[in-house]
Structure formats: C-alpha cells, structure tokens
Image (cartoon, each protein chain N blue to C red):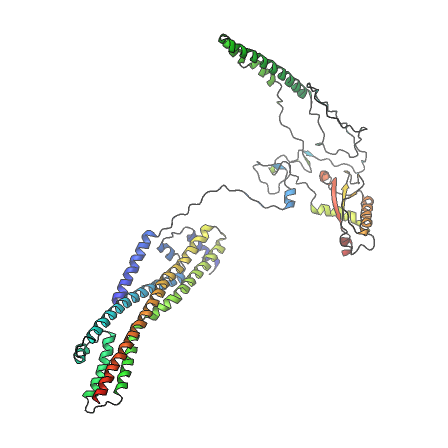
Length: 237
Length: 317
C-alpha cells in the first residue's frame, strides 16, 4: 500500500460515523472479510445451538417415554411392532436393532443361537455409536468457533490497527481524532469474534456433557436389554 | 436444522437492527482544563534569551536584542582609565530624628580601577528636589493629620455634650480639595525611563524576549577562543599530564582593551600537590598573553569571566 493511498483513506477516517455500519464500511476489505466470516459463524453457531437444544430435549423426552413403555410390562414384540417402521429416537433405534437381530436369528430356517448374544451386543454397539455420532454432529463447529473465533477477531483487529497506523504515518498527524476511528473499527472485529466465540464455547461444553449423559444412558439401556435377551437365549437353548 | 438456522438468522438480524438504533457513540465531553504552556529550553538557550519585551507582536526569525545606542569600540591603546565623577547623593534631611545609619565611607576617594565603558552605567542622581519636597510635604502632612485628629477628638467630645454642633463637625469633615490639588502638583509626571541598551547594531524593534535577557552573552565558542588564546602561552608543568583532578578554575577580570585588570583569582582548590604548580602556571599564562582579542561590543559579558583549565587538554593532542 503506497502512502498516497493510505493518505487518501486517512481522510475519511477523521470524519467517520461510528455506528455499527459505519465501523463496518470503513474497514479494510480483509477486516470486512473477517467480520463477515465471524458474523456468519455466529449465525451458524446459534443455528446449531437451537437445533441441538431441540434435538436433545426431544431425545430426552422420547427416551423417558420409551423407558416407561419398556418397563411397563408391555410385550416386547408389540413394542417392536410399534417402533419397527420409524425408530424416531436413539433408544428406540437401539431396541429395534437388537430386536431385529434377535428376530432374524429365530425367523431363519436354521436357528443360530451360538454367538447370538455376541451379535446382539455388536449390533447394539454399532447403533450406540451411530446415535452418539448423530447427537454429536456439528458440535465440533461450536468447538472450533469457540477456540478460533477470538483469534480470527484478533487478526482483524491487528490488521485494522496496522492500516490505521499506516494512515497515521501517511497523514503525519497523531491527534486522537485520527487514531481513534481506526482503532475503534479494528476493535470491532475482536468484539464480533468474542460475540461469536463466547456462546459457542458455553454451548459446546453444555452439549458435550449432554451427549455424554445420553450416551451413558444408551449404554446402560443396552446392557440391561442385552442381559434380558441373554436370559431369553439361555432359557430357549 | 432449518428451524435452527431460521431462528438464528432472525435473532442476529434483530440484534443488528437493535444495534443500529442504540449503538451510537456518545461524544466524549472532556473537562476543559486550563492549558499551561510548557517549553523545554536548554540552559544555554535560557542564558541567551533575547532582550525584548514579552508582549512584542513580531516574532523574528533571527531576533536581535534591542539596541538604542551603538557601543563604541575603543582603541586598545587608550589605556588611561576614565574616572568619572560620581555626583554626590544628598539624602534629604529627615525631620523625625531617626538614628542615622552609619554611613560607610571609604577612607579615601575611590579611584575607579576600571574604566566605565558603558553609557548605561552612569548613575544618575535620582534623589533631587522632588524627593526633598516630597519628604517635607510628608512631614507636614503628618503634623496636619495630628492636628486634625486633635480637632476631631475635641469635636467628638463636644458632640457628645451637645448635638447642636453636629453640623459644624460635618463641615470640618468635608474633603478639602485645595490641599489635595497642591499635593498632586508634586507627583512625578515624567515618563518612565530605561537605560539605553548598547549593542553592535542599532535595533529599535523589540523582539520577543525578556527585559533582562542578554542575548549578547559570550557564546561557548568565544569562551573557547579566549581559552585558546590563553593556552597558547600556557606551558603546564611537567608531570601533570596524567593528573586527574587538576582542573583549574580561574576568574579573570579584563579591561575593554583586552588587558587583565586585576590579578587572576584561582577559584578552586585541590589536595593534589601539583595543583598549586599548575594553577600558578595558568595564572602566569594569563598574564603573559594579554591583551586578548574579544568582541568589543560584548565587553559587558567578558569583563569578568571564569575560565576552566584542564592540563589534560594540553597533552591530549
């Protein structure tokens, strides 16, 4: 950037409006890019947050309902028939997967009891992994924004301060009126970075603990169910 | 996911809109403090403050000191010291017999050893008829005041006794303008005067500066020139070459023709046994090298100078 350009850009700096749009439009294009990226990531973070909140609350409710139905003494066959077509939550999916494997072992021409227990456990493990993956999906975005957001904002700030110092050097005027708008505009980038990063970090922590809780619940259910099935197998053999 | 994205975008848009409305910087209102002009000047700049007035309108780029009278350059051969008679100062006779301060009179009429080169140094007898008259008038005033007070007291006593004479008392209290007018005539109505400033060239416009400024101080180079002239004659004693603290400070009084007016004084002391030798040799050098060539117009400044001698300068090469 040659000094003449900087001097040109220094002129509007002195008579700047400091509204949010003013701060944005006066910024260097790199800073603009950083700001836009940060705002977009903030939008995306909040979208994920809303999505996950709904998903987790729904999953939790569905699990409660399913557990209630499961332990109510209802016939498992009946429950399976109800859920078979649309296993709409993770615990139902787990149950359906195990039952399917169980059924296949009985429905076939040859009864294959040997290793049924192991197969069921394998199937349940795979289902748990898939379900946890579904719950965890996009949480990594939150983690990334939470850790990288401040750095990206800081980059925008450093760049903005750099250019504002260049314009100071070009205009050969160090009065606060020349320095302040550039720095305010540069700090705006960090502000956006923090605005994006703080909720991302908080919600990432919250959701990852939630995922752990639900995964533990699924594991517990899988163990219990596999114990029940194991008893059934032993009785039938 | 769609729902979340919609909600998030809507939330951000709302937040931005709210920010547009409310996020307007309040202009910072600084508390106006009285500003204090601060300038950093070096000591040499301070000593060379131009003679002028604080309120001068023009700030000249190369300020010149005010000069009313061109200092005359005297012939160096003109050695006869001019003795100007000081007019005697006659103190006005004091009426109240105060104990007279013992006048310190020199035992003999002092012949001035130095010529008086400056026109501005002429002591004009300022105590004159006016002062005398003023003092007499003051004494009179005191007497009158006393009399008036006595009269007043009498009247007040009378007042207390009879209220009829109040009018008379008021008459007496009235201001007597004729008396004041007679005193007004005694006021010194002459314009304020100053002594003529001498310099190299005439200059009537005052530049920015102080009345007491002396731009015409000896610059360091001129002091160096004087020292160089002295050192030309100086042969420091052998053995002082690596003496550390052998700096000799000598006070030097010069006549206008550049000759030494009085025996140079050695100002500092040193426990070094070589010091006395070095100092003596410096003194001899000063006496041997006169007269010195220095700017005549700045005689005021160099008639009494202090010069530092460091033997190391002589050997350093």
